[in-house]
Length: 84
Image (tube, rainbow, N blue to C red; front, top):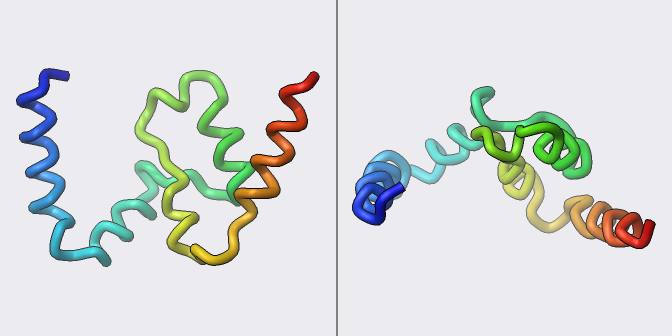
C-alpha cells in the first residue's frame, strides 16, 4: 500500500468511528471480522492456515472485560511450548 493511501484510509476510518466509539465496538464485533471464542481459541484460529492474512481480529475480547482476560495464562502456556 502506498503511503498516500494509508492517509486516505485513516481519514475514512476516523470519519466512520472517531466520534462514535459504540459504532467502533459494533464493527469489532461484526461477524465479518470478529473471531468467536476465548483468547486462546481465537489466536489458534487466526494463526491457522492463512487466516492471519485475512481480516480477522480478537481485539473485541479486550472490551468485554479489560480488567480480566485469560491473555496472561495463554501467553505463559505459549512460551512454555516454545521450548519443545
